[in-house]
Image (cartoon, rainbow, N blue to C red; front, side, top):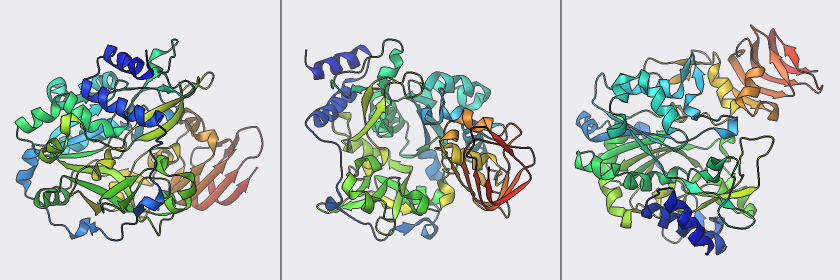
Length: 457
């Protein structure tokens, strides 16, 4: 039996739909043919100018009756040491991501009949469903209207190029196919057809860990009036945004394209990180015209560029992470090149507030941020936006929590905090200005009081 047949059989036995299997096999065949999914600098050119959000007018409120708010909720946050849905992590004042998302939606529903949906993964569906029992207004329509589950991809053994096997923990043989799977998952689940049949035309999609991404009537109005199949929200890149996917133009076709860091050849890394050349990065906040999306999906599949990610079989295990594997993924924003006529809009950083690392979580949990009346985390009055830089001692949430047994220090007046080595912040600690704490000893040291400048142990 060929490797392709092995993969096809494994996915069929898992109950995956033919449309998804065919699409994944297409990616696998590109991989074994030597395609690494790269987008060389020589094939693209920078995007110089885009329309800004503050120049747009608000759309008619009637558009909300045709609009769906969808949150991508498939991530486990294994990179932060988590083994449950990342959105169940407490982020602020006892609220998890899902608490704040639910409260945002219920607040919006006080005025507008907005449809809410979640795309979960096989790893997050059960935990998320259990969690939402506390929000009866959302939970009561869970199976019929709220949730659908994205597909799952088999991991590829990097040495044999066969399906990865891990009998001691079979779930590790599978991985999410990247958020680009949203399009196939909408089709395979039947949700796209049902939404269209029910009169829905527009969809706002964002990540569940981005609490700044709320429904904006200006963007909805522009999506409708421009008749674009898709709008991508982008921000102007800064010094901290050199690694995220950036927007560009394909030299040959003139289409907008998204290039992720995993798609950049090593020799082009300097250009990729040049924020004066490639000025805009993708926030992963997207607005879709569902009718145009349906028309573009020939055979139920939207062809997207491949992303090749090298991982370990069980990345959450420190003791035995297993052999090297390859995960084949696609990016949701890459549809900007697959849907002709799509646009990108410059939005302020307030709409891009993701929590991807413990650095960001540490800042969000501090007094530098408060929760607004519409349940968004915003900077407190007079607060700086703290830029946190921890070493690998704080890469995982449990490790970070050990450093703050009495709570996060005050960061309201902090611009930058850099920590090297193991420390414990005492209760009442205040960090101001730009501070660097370095502990070169093997023991964890306690810091307290007012900290600014350099502190060395």
